[in-house]
Image (cartoon, rainbow, N blue to C red; front, side, top):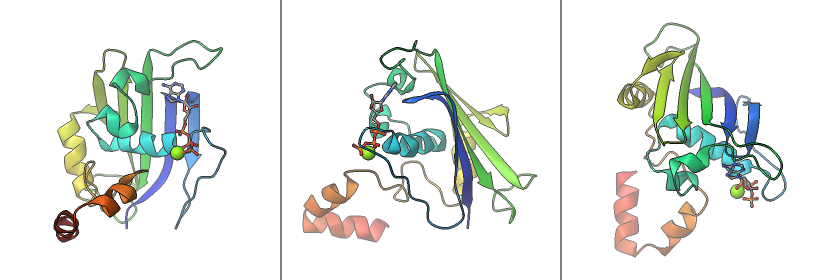
Length: 165
Ligand code: ATP
Ligand code: MG
């Protein structure tokens, strides 16, 4: 199974400067007070996986994904997040025991993608992730509020969703 080793976030949402978030084997849980940035960690992962809508990362527009300086700091010009995957079992058809996928976004909303630090298109990233069964807009990412929406679906719609899964 594909495993995320770490997330490196630079000026993404509430993460000023560079923050490295290690992920252990098995189940990982992020705890902290309200508003401390737990969901922003999940958003940072969705960002790298290529989620196209800023709203799905709880931002009105892409520029709002960039660190805004908070109360006293100065706003950044660009956000950058990398997700490092373990590739020991060669699930991804690339050389090396790890795979690093990086995405940046500028204030204009323009994004760039990198695979192991080499510039690639979003489609190339999405195609590579598909080898591991990861789909940025698929059902393997369950966001805050999704379960409530699932409960509130009409039974027919819920049935369709289950069939799709
Ligand atoms: P809860 O327990 O309520 O779900 P949480 O730990 O999931 O909280 P988040 O939603 O991840 O918290 O973080 C919210 C914080 O992120 C807010 O303080 C908000 O101001 C900050 N934030 C969001 N976008 C930015 C940005 N672009 N720049 C700086 N800070 C930001
Ligand atoms: Mg939250």
